[in-house]
Image 1 (tube, rainbow, N blue to C red):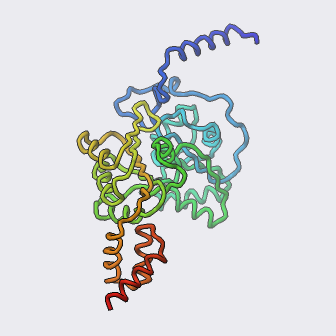
Image 2: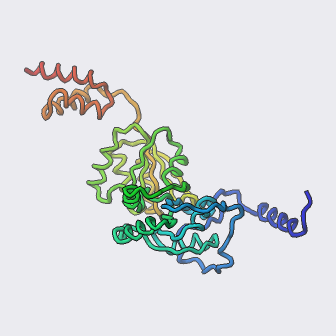
Image 3: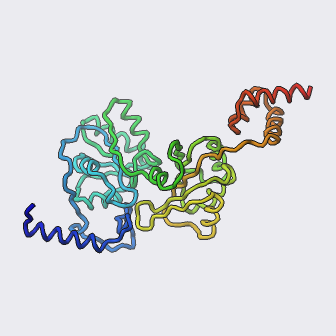
Length: 334
């Protein structure tokens, strides 16, 4: 293949960049949220027009567009094409989305759509959709609606049979799950836990018997306390805490819940938000003496059938076996 002088120079420059680059997969990422300490970047330096963007005309409708969770290079070509072709873009923070658009030389009308103004903005979005406009909804980072605004908007649009489609892409929960080393065969994403301990422990108790890997979002100031509550309610299971995902200082700390809780209690809260991944319950034969004690306690408040069902849900033991034991206990005490 013949190369022009320009192409040869470009290839050489690319080779030199590659030779001098780090092997770290997340080297020199562009953060999805602006760093107030960073110096301003000129428009010319910030813009990068990717080659090969799809040129198809967008159909009218609502586009739910996933955006990077840390490294701006993770945006998909299809997402860029939708953002380029949308009539207007609704986002959590216009400053954050504005930086993403500037990075790729996209200039579009931006309006804020977040938890505090959703009731006022939802009719505006629906009116635009009724007029046949092409509207994109993005969050600051990741996939819209997943612990982010947009659910009620989608419900309202569906109620009017307005067209909706999703543009898949980055998601912190799935990224943390596949980095955790824990089983991804069945998993449950539970979002953010309540900030207060009593409510948090009640929420954890609801998931305690679920035979699946659990995934939570948590703010780092509460991380050590939440991990300790998980160990208390769920048991000292294997777990992983992932943070700064896709960025230069990405971390995935793995171990038992008590050990990870102790680490963050001593080290103090890390930067950013964290994703906590907890292994499913460990299969073990229940102690029969303990089962009998719990069954007697349940029988003091419930009937035989209800007590057996309760213990079956908590221990995983067959309900029929527990029913027979409960029946024998009740008859033996008569």
